[in-house]
Length: 112
Image (cartoon, rainbow, N blue to C red; front, side):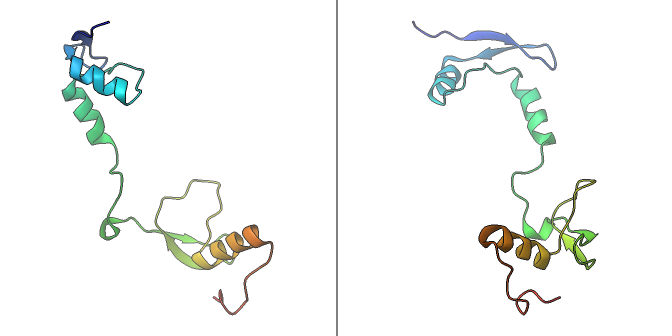
């Protein structure tokens, strides 16, 4: 079966756009099963609303928090979800090593 350009309608703006043979081949090579839903302009708008894949350390957001385990004030590089405990680096590493090895680290390594 020979592929042909397809006319599709954008779900956002309703304009008709062409899904070219080249794009269809790309989709097939990448094993993408769904046809595009948005025209290029609306796709670009949608992508611009997404946060960047990686944020440089200089622009990283540090959120001030209080450690749920030891009560120490610290910062974390994310916005905590409500109702979930947040740990300082030392308590997090201690919990992580306990979970991995079943034993706590030497008290001198993670002293506050």
